[in-house]
Image (tube, rainbow, N blue to C red; front, side):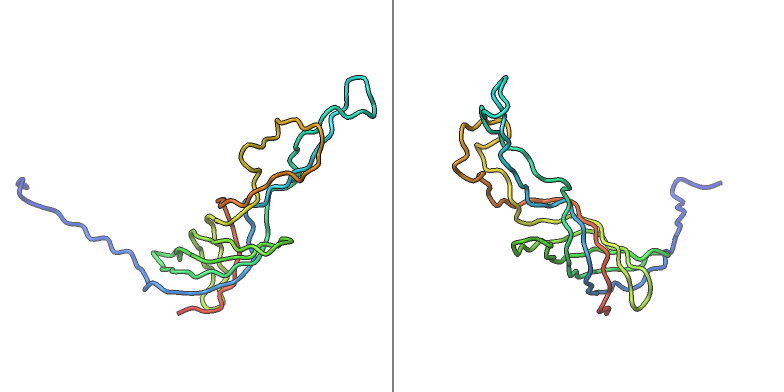
Length: 167
């Protein structure tokens, strides 16, 4: 008969490898993008040519950005799954040069030349409609450009990279 002071101890060993540091480069897709707007005319009632006022309309068709990134990975293998975290930077394919910061989790596949699936977040500067300006406003004339400001923005990211250094 077991006593209250008796203890049972179970030890479950999970095979795990030493953590490793690696670097990779590849392509990314993200929801972080520069907003773009245009003035849209509204005609006077009953007229086919007379413009009553203009409103600001969102021009973005697909709010996705593609580009190239380089990442540093800190990975380990627990059981049969190799996983880890990543940090890095990327350059989106845009008219103006911009740099994004990447962070998240990584899933490497293969032993030496590894392909790595990276899922996480991204932060960077992006064009946004300035404070005090909205798409509900009406303008009589359009003598100036739509006021945009650069703001720090965040979104999701997914990338597929090729491991070029593994230690």
